[in-house]
Length: 306
Figure 1: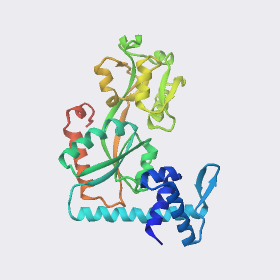
Figure 2: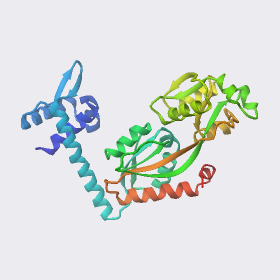
Figure 3: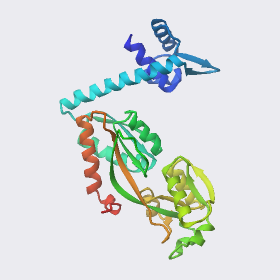
C-alpha cells in the first residue's frame, strides 16, 4: 500500500473534510480526490460516502482509519525514540491542556522552555478535561495538564502538580463584596455564571450547591473562563472559578473575591502522559521543567499545598 496515499487518507479522515485536509497538506482539493480514488482502486474499497455537501467515512473507511492511526502513531514513536537516543532537546512537542491550564499555566511555561531550548516547538490543544484525557489515552499528545478530578484510564500516568482554590467572584460593584461573610442565604439570592455542563468546573459547582443545599440558579452557561469573567465583570452574576484565573482582574479591581466561609474547595492540576508512549528526551526534559517551574516560581507559592 502506498504510504503517501495512506497519509492523505488519514488526514482527510481526521477532519472529514477535503477542504481542511487540503489546507493542512498544501494540496488542492481536486488533487486529493484523485489520490483518494487511486487508493480506493488500489485496495478495492470505497472509503468515503457523500451526504449532501459533506463526506463521512464508510464502514471500510472507519476500519482503515483505525489501522492508519496506529501506523502513524508508531511512526511518531519511532521518530521520538530516535530523537531521544541522541539526547537532543528539540523538535515538536504535542501538548494538551484543559481550559484553565491550557490558557493560564502552559503558555508561560512553554515560553520559558523555548528560551532555554530554542529548537523546540509546541502544538497545544485545549479542551475540557475529558477531551484532553481522551487525547492522552489515544496518544495524540505527548504531555497534558488537566484540572479537576476524573477517573483516568489505567494507561494514563497521573501526578498532581499543585492545588488551586476555587473562589466565588463578583463584579467589584456588587454590594456583597463588602460583606465579611457571604452566607448560604445570600447565595440563594444570586445568579451564577457557569461553565458548560461537560466541564469539571460545572461538576464542582454542582457539588458545591448540593453541599450547601441551595437550588440551581443559573443566569448563563458560557464556553470558557474568559467569557465567564467578562459576564461577572458586567455584574450579570457571580461565578465559581480557580483563583489562578483572576489575577489580572483582581489587580485592576474589576473582580472581587467574595468572603464565603461555606466554600473551602481545593482544585488540583494534574500532569498526564500515556505510560505506553515512549517519552523523548525533550518530553522528559519538559516534564522536569514544568515541575521545577511550579516549585520555584513566586506566583505558584500562593497555590501550593503541603
